Length: 320
Image (tube, rainbow, N blue to C red; front, side, top):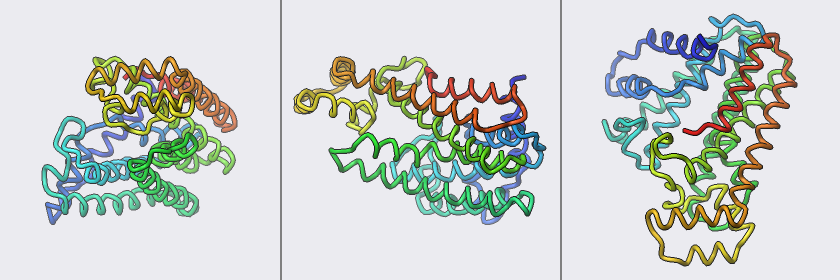
């Protein structure tokens, strides 16, 4: 069995042993519901990978890994409220299945549970681990606020966009790896290097996400191409297109296009103005930075280190 499949199975088994059947049921049932909707469990798996990379005992990292997963799902519950989303992983969102007030309160309870799980570590390591987790939790809030601010702006720049996706998405992957490394006994330098590996891999993942939304195969991606284009979202492709050919971009914006015609026109423009090529180059530079950081993390398990490198390659070049 692949090492990561083993980690995911361990996370799933540990999650299944947790008891959320508590009173008041309206508070705890939504927690069981959102955690039961599945997901790839990549973030908790990265806690275990970070731990094992430095020769740590995986049992010591299992509950903290759940803390990362519970926190991630807490953020999804609140994001769905802000986005007024009706579906999450093909099922009703928590606020749709119950109501907004219950979703807010259950999300708050998940944040507390996440801290409880994270705190299940060796006392000597707790301050450093809590520092990483608390910093990351606040950064994710900052990233979400930046994303909301961008909705009313027409002048989002590349550095702002990359900072937003770093905060909103990439830092949690980095924190998962760093927390696992600290549990496993890594030095501060190696743990921070593993954090940088995760953050840059997460950024490359998000850039690839922008590319897939425009150019991905709908059969593989699982949704129609061009969703971001139809919503006029500030993606890296849009930002680069505006920077590279502002007059052409503005002319395109003035056209009354919709549906597939709009998606086709923008995708063609991204290619002709060089925005697509520039986004692909940015993805490759982020992947390179990720792999360089991994080299700086002097882990003991060289096989696992190679698998982490392959994981970063997959994240940045996935087709779904």
